[in-house]
Image (cartoon, rainbow, N blue to C red):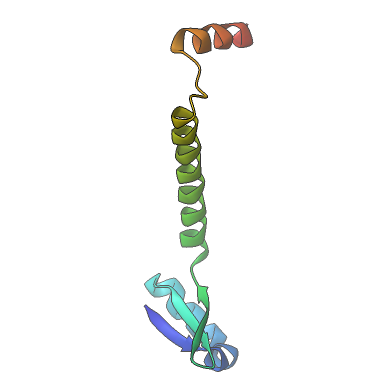
Length: 85
């Protein structure tokens, strides 16, 4: 992962963005020697957000199973048939 000082980002934003788009490698921005932010390609960010949403859905499903908050298949099928009519 590439690391850039925030001052370099201010001075060379166009070049840093061009390099980012070319390499698709995230850039860690630091301030006063400490990590401050990540700069990532838009497509990569959107992909990560879709992946996170999917994982959150799976987590909710697993939690529902553990808590017994599920519907038997036959009942779910019956509900869906009524809804689809």
